[in-house]
Image (tube, rainbow, N blue to C red):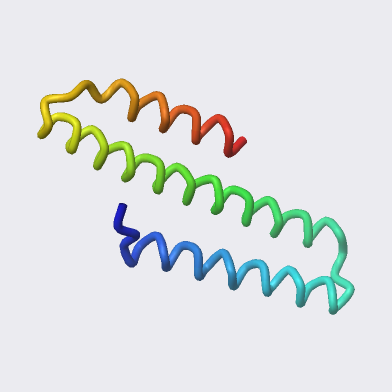
Length: 86
């Protein structure tokens, strides 16, 4: 799978958010603010995982169809990746 600019940008934003949380901790920000930002990071990571799995699944299904194969294995692998990420 090729990782496009969109997913790399998403991860760079997450990296920035994490740096921001570390700065908040160094500045002794209230724990509620820190937890709120950590929740936002978790959501962003979850969305990134979903995007990567979806793009990979799309690619695997297209490849299976081109080869005249059943895409069931690729679908099951994608489901397993999603379950494992939770």
